[in-house]
Length: 609
Image (tube, rainbow, N blue to C red; front, side):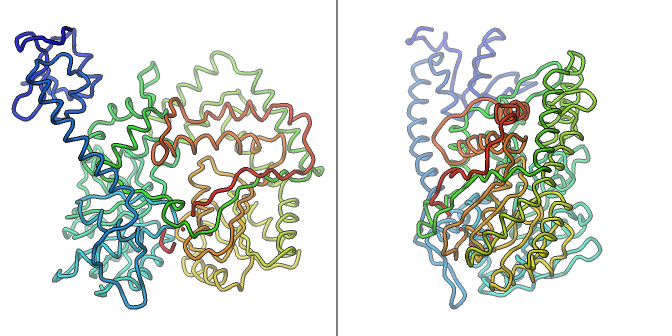
């Protein structure tokens, strides 16, 4: 279109504080692709108030409208630069009350100032940087003059005690603190409740308008259809009301566990413009598209733009490498375990199953798998389940979800003896304390039994371990009384500060790199004085060995969305790629025991991260 079009020819106009597209049906793709909103009856027009979106179709505007777009875009760009800078801030000149003997770190002051300037804030600092302390600082300022402050803390069950301890430690004006149960709602200034019982506590949650509602580990409410999400943020077919709060804090060091779409529910609740519509959000940032099986949104696209929009609106995020430069480095190592008879049988079984899968799927089986995947997504199943559903192999093949789980479980059991031997060797070689992480209960029990037979008394925490026992184990590790603990990946990824330990060993892996990073950062926190060594124990030629390499690619997607300046387009790691990798030459020629340095890092951690 000609650059000097007249007002009569123009398709884009500025009126009433918004940009209006007046083109007909045949030009609808232009405002739609630019991000305009469709206004149905009675207006039936495309509009936006965002000059950046209008700029994408400015060639269709008259000169006066184009000049207005340019002027407003410059102002918006300046404001955006300031907002992004604030989301990286490492210090702030602000007076924050603090109990005697305690002090906020400079970047924590900046986080407190950032949150005080907004109604809703996403504090997404890396795990171990002290988000709990920043929350207490916010409350110390915001509630200083409140006659009857009302504070709600929503957190995972394993963190109930930690939150009570931190509130009592850091609040200047002590609040009465109560822990809610499904049967008892305390009448206290501050109420701490876990996500699992939110749906059962609707009466207590809705009884008052909270001055502050804090959602710790807010990735727990990433599934828009889950009961806990609807109880916290409202919505669903039941049209549930959100928890009433004047101001809200969302805390998580891992806002994206696997895929960018996991940000949507919280951002939508916070009123962030880019999350006003699920399909627009996922089309832009998740490569969303419609096919015969439904809406596909497991990809990752336009990640630098996503990060910029997050930082311009509600998110403050600092890396440990930027704000905790005194923290010792973290180093990752992949350790290939010796191949005893059990290990060789495990490798042989995996090889047989993988090769059966590679040759067996029929067209009908592939179509059935796609339908199963679509059904999983429609029902809001986890990313892991959805990814695993992609693997089709007929009965008995690795594509069968149950069979894949059995293979990984069998391999983990086959590694137990070598895992115990490896951990004992570390214990005998120095004074380090060690955290051993695994997934299956029988694997955890077998490792603990093996350590006891070797003369050590390991602490054990799994999902059913009572909170009081968790805290006792935490204290025994922190005091140096206990040198080795065997922990569940899901049970201990959050809520524990264990910086007395400096070696982390993964006997099994999780599908999400962020879940494993959470486990690593139990040790890599403020107070850690030694370099942290993270070891992944594998058997060469197995599914887990290939997974250790491939799943790392997910970290690239997460980093690009939150921290990096690079663009990563396309889908996240497909499990079928991992299966293909497991059938490489190494499966036929497993190497002898080797230790491979996977990299070193100087990023690093704190209480209540």
